[in-house]
Image (tube, rainbow, N blue to C red; front, side, top):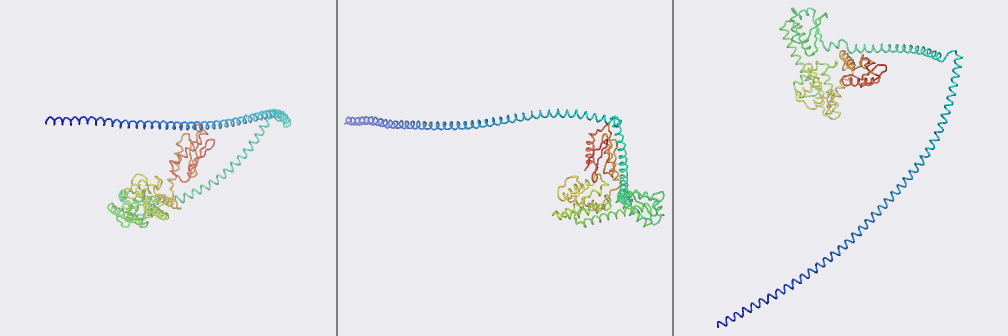
Length: 519
């Protein structure tokens, strides 16, 4: 029983093994068939792809060959066209050259013909000239026989006659010119003297540098002088002025270039004369009182100027400086009145142009601020005015107007230009200003000094009221070619270093004249 079971089990196991082997073999065979089938299909696909690639390559090759052939054909055609154009151009140039050669040949022929004709004419002229020479020689011999004089004797005779005639005419012309110059000089001299009398009278110098104090009687002079001159010394020491006590009846002259000091001394003298008590202590008291009055007047005048022009919010020190301008003149023109006038003119022009009127008036009123202190501080009135305006925190527009009103710097605003124009208008008003004699003489001396500084200049004279400088040069040092250069250099030097009205004529004299104008 057990044996049969075992045998049965063994039979089943053997059958299973045999079945597994059979199934394995069948599976392997199936997979092999499937794989062979897939490989076959892949090979076919690869062959198909290769065939298509070969066909595409051949098509591409044919297309590229066609494009290359077309490009070659196009290039060949273009090259042939260019060659044709070049051949045409060369043919044209050849034709032009041929025409030029023909033209040159014709011109050469014409030139040769002209040369031949000219040679014939030269020969004919030479023949005529020889004939004329013979005729002239015969005529001269005939004239010498008729006149009984040789050629040289006749020439000398004619020259003598011409010289005498020219001398006579020259003498007459010189006499005429001298008479004309004399008349013109007399007229010019009268004009100059009249102008000098009118513009530079003694009153002008007096009003600029001195003040006259009237006295009740001549005995007061002695009281003012005091015992051993102590009173007058005290007054001069305290005020810083000079008292001139001369033969002028019932008057004392107060002399000083500082108008404020002169005014203080004048008021103090008037108070001492009215009081009658004149001694050093009383003099000190009266001078102090007069100084306070002048300071008050300065303040009042400064405030009046601000109210009159409508300029407000000025620093108190600026108001005092404006008031000091009441006692200052420039070319005979009162500086305070000039500043007020400039402020009004600048304001009127500013209103026409639509610019800030108040600021324009402020700049016009303060433009000559430096003239209030230029006797006490160093520098020009422009520099001093700019320093004062900056010190008291004025508007930059006002500072620029002060700095630019004489052209020291370029104006940066319209107001600066307006102030510049208003200043020129106020100064140019007829009768507003006058130049004193000292400045006039100083300008002439400066002009002559500058001219004499050039090498080769022997003498230099400023004539015609400084409108012309006549320069005499050394002939051995300055040639005629250098005269023009010297005149030009002199004119440029005058333009750069001198201030003058109008123009100055530079007249350089050697044997000829070279004239240059400094404009």
